[in-house]
Length: 218
Ligand code: URA
Image 1 (cartoon, rainbow, N blue to C red):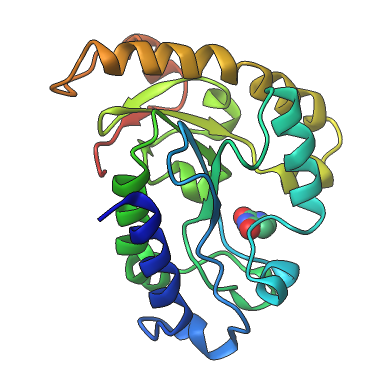
Image 2 (spheres, rainbow, N blue to C red):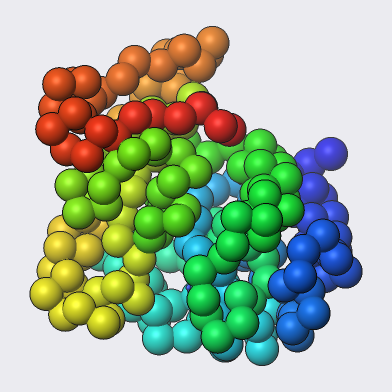
């Protein structure tokens, strides 16, 4: 199956999914949107009010800031794929719970496998936890890790910068690094077809910075 066909199938499945309790308050599932052949995939936390209304990711205030950040990196929504770790809105925008994350994980895994991105940008703490173990976002944001044969770059969630204006410039600086990371990830993957990839992080340094460890979940 082509990536676009797999993504369409996932979208149809999430629309009728009853694997977790989030379906009770679902108006629209938000499977994700963008380029099925994207080199970069952005993974947020979960749909909010506006996303639940429209069935599209990051269309509220955080989404507007994300658009600005994409521009900062020379990217558009058409270049990338944007999704979340859970595809249905947690009531009141609470954090997704463990059983909800677990129930939704196969959708995310299939999306990643279908799109096969070079770089995964995690937006916020919860999404970061899928790829990097024991990392503190304040210590490792904007840095690159290898996880499951791809580059993972943890970033602050755009909503965090809206609530904490001092983070705005930090997030912008992190996004500005993306073009170089994309090039580096593409080059490295081209030259490592077996996907056993080098770590870029010095373990000593990692210990100093929140015990970040790379995971190979995907
Ligand atoms: N916050 C998220 O994490 N995802 C969205 O789609 C919107 C807001």
